[in-house]
Amino acid sequence: IKVWGIDTYGSVFKKYKETGILDKNEIYPYITEGIGEDFLPQNVNFDVIDLFEKVTDKDAALMTRDIARKEGIFAGNSAGSAIAGLIQLKDKLKPEDVVVVIFHDHGSRYMGKMYNEDWLRERGFLKDEKLTARSILAKRSNQEVITLDCEKTITEAINIMKTLSISQLPVTQQGMVIGKVTESNILDSLLENPSLKSSPVKEIMTASLPFVDLNTSIDKISSMINKDNSAVLVEDEQGKFEIITQYDIIEAISG
Image (cartoon, rainbow, N blue to C red; front, side, top):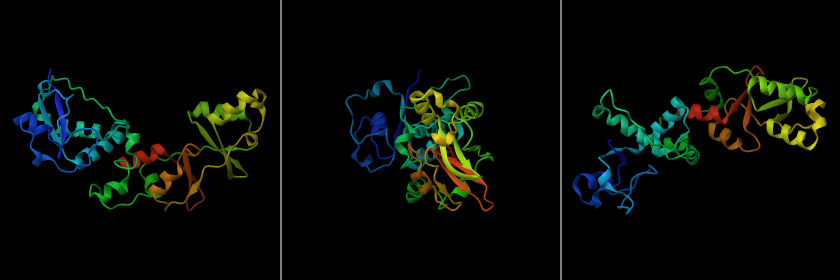
């Protein structure tokens, strides 16, 4: 068994492992989080680590996004460092080797950093290409927005959600979106009054998902998605509705 550690530029671990010297010239500010240090923590046993590999801030950040986009794993910055470092070390591996990579950090801590295009762009990690609702929709396959007329029953809403494996439905009246129903507010309503199953959804619907136009920036869209609104609606030039979820945003910024 070999144990490989991933380090970052600005940390002292790699040189200390290789030379036994704590070289303060190795220390300078870095962006990568979750790995590396500018001192030697007492809980690090260098004897059980076979080598350290350094990864740049840029490579770590971009690989973090790649993991989300290509593998569907919403991991943190240190995960990007780990995979980038492993790729750098690939020539040390044999075909029969089994590799285990530990991801110990979650992507939710980095929505304002590695998953924020402006933040990356300010640091020169991304080209200056602003994402908008239009570009988010262009990056994904076409998805029909399923709506429900306000006179339809709560039971009908439940059946549609179950059949399509969705958790929310925009509610319409004469083709206009006037509200929404979600799994959670249906559940709350039925727990309070089970007889509501045959009632129209307009009796329990909540405020509509917010609307944006095709030129709305990804930062604005992201700020509108919260615990009350898990998505936004987009109206195109032909009056057709599209929906953008948090998953769509992650897919777009990881692309």
